[in-house]
Length: 488
Image (cartoon, rainbow, N blue to C red; front, top):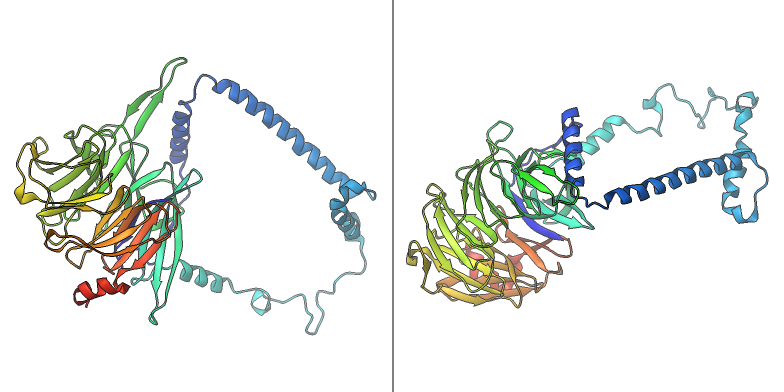
């Protein structure tokens, strides 16, 4: 499945990504320590499992020895049983080569012969069968190069208990054709749930190219997208520091200072204060992190159930919105964490939320019951849940609306995705939503949709089938009719 998709702005990615250095001794020791902590979860029956594993290992060792003996016998014996006919070719080949008498052979190959059949060349450059290493290197560099006009999409994936990030390249040629492929992958230690791209220069310089990943674990990992074959994140925010378990007792967990204590369900990077990242967690908390310092600055506990999503206002960058399974949405000023802020009640568990990029007063919330509600903060009352009705309530899907995305260029154009496997485009003009297009992109249950900032009508879609889908929404007649002028 694809749990989340994020676009990387064009021209940001390094033209030729660096290859990661092998892990240091200290990093290896840290990995071993983490592995030991993980094993502390095992129950009291783990010793019996270890004994069974030792027996299996012994059996495997014996089988390997036996196989080696059989292989040796095949090379010496001229007779094999009919049941061993699959080894005939191997045995005959070994006999024909007669490797024991190889050095005694008189008839050999004439190395310095003449004519077109030469098997020896004074230099590799003269040998037509040896390809120039420089050509290979240049081809490898060309394959790995990311051009400034390439679109980069990061997908957080899980398949068969293996989790990773897939970094996709969309190469659009001058003749209008496009080619999309996975450039490289990043292994993850836990099932990913959400992502947020950020350009905070964590390694110096003016800007970076990083992706923050929230997962089933309490830690937030931040990976450098300009490095391939990396095995460790550039920064880890929070997480488990130590686990202890005594026989017959539950595991005792010690968390790092400021860490979440449960899964991280939502992330939001602040584009104006570029070192700031907000997180939402199943531990009912909202946290604000200084990623440059690698620490939590603010912890807020204004929800009474899992917090599913967070979003910074595009125009007022200190204003943060959060949505929860307690069926409420809360707006707070990040500079005043103790202030109660503004609160709205909604009709079901919050799945996703987003600020309108074209109007700082408006936001929409998608819910577990398939509805989408719009709100205007100018009608809010401070300190308690607003009794005012939403600006609109839209019965968008038959199942949970897991994801929404505003178009960054065309006002009032909203995309919604649902576990009913459908993606829909809506015109929200005048708080009277109308469905423009409804499409089944064949991606399974939809978990993430996102419009591109660089190509605003291109929508990335990720779902339960694990395949990235791209939808040129402007190719739809109704979208072109209503928003074609904006696109031009």
